[in-house]
Image (tube, rainbow, N blue to C red; front, side, top):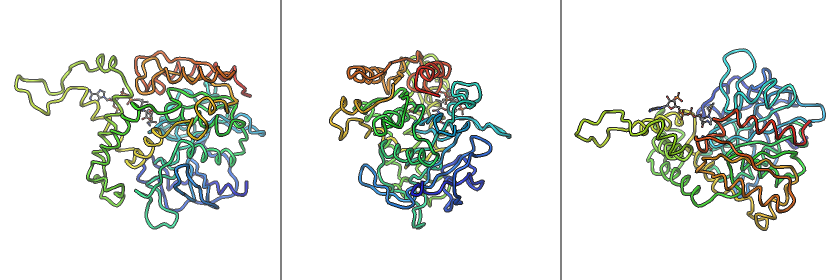
Length: 410
Ligand SMILES: CC(=O)SCCNC(=O)CCNC(=O)[C@H](O)C(C)(C)COP(=O)(O)OP(=O)(O)OC[C@H]1O[C@@H](n2cnc3c(N)ncnc32)[C@H](O)[C@@H]1OP(=O)(O)O
Ligand SMILES: N[C@@H](CCO)C(=O)O
């Protein structure tokens, strides 16, 4: 445990959801980790304090903070821990706070808690904000170790493998030798696969949802268009905008990037049912260029919402990490990479996902099984598209419950 770095308790000065306040310059150092009170409170692990963390792409970091939340109680032998890996704009807050006060909704509320699928009377559930993110874990908006400003454009490119390596340090620090399950959707599913490949002996069940073994040309096309929108915003300033006055950051570019991605998260069918050709400003016979359809206003709303809770540089980094995701890189191909996995795999696709289409999950299972791996495909039947893993919680819960019953769990 000596080289793990300091675990620090939740600091009320950091009590905030926003990236703008996510990085206080000092974190209180403490000795050993102890559970937060109430459960669900954000906690921080400082790691790589002692040495340089060399990233897969050659960049370097030191003194990395990992923000995480936990629910439930860790068994004395550390055997009952489940790791949840979040998607692009998610964070460590997978479930609402269980203690007093107004619970803040989490992205998988309803699945986590006493008697729920991720039963906190039985499991110790952990979720950490990813490296490069903007909700407490070190990212571009974080102060540099020398305290001479924030990283900004100087933050190195990170990969999904780098994210997983920081999570492994967290597991070490918490005393978790192997996870009962590692579960996540989209970018979270990419982390799940890398966990199975990088640390095969440290996972006992893998549940990658709505994800892929390697980004396709179309996925790269979508995400890179969003990145271009951010880079074209003059307020982006090459990534160094953190001293801009409130409201003067690259929010226009980020909003457009979100509008583009929101289209890919949903479907033609649902957009047609929800918005059809309905207009916001009724067409009067004289067509105004900026008179809007309802779907335009909806996308604008989603752009506006994201800029209030997300950092443009993190959006660039994390979408790049997804595009760089390729489990076969440096491993002698897809079959060899998947051949490293020892844990049973439940790969879940979404029937209507056009961003990470279900054939990619099916292909994972086909290759795993061709090598004798214990892999199964299951499907979320939904009209909603990619976001179904966040919207169809009843189906997700049923699939997870089945996998946890069958898998190697306590
Ligand atoms: C529970 C959480 O997600 S916590 C938030 C943290 N975020 C994350 O963790 C990332 C993952 N979460 C997400 O991506 C999303 O929150 C999801 C997928 C879970 C849910 O998506 P939603 O945004 O709720 O879905 P939906 O497509 O129904 O959009 C609803 C919003 O569009 C607005 N809207 C609907 N129609 C229109 C329209 N015609 N014009 C303008 N706005 C509209 C609604 O008023 C609503 O606004 P609100 O969210 O400010 O209340
Ligand atoms: N809508 C989700 C899914 C992305 O895969 C998010 O914003 O994180």
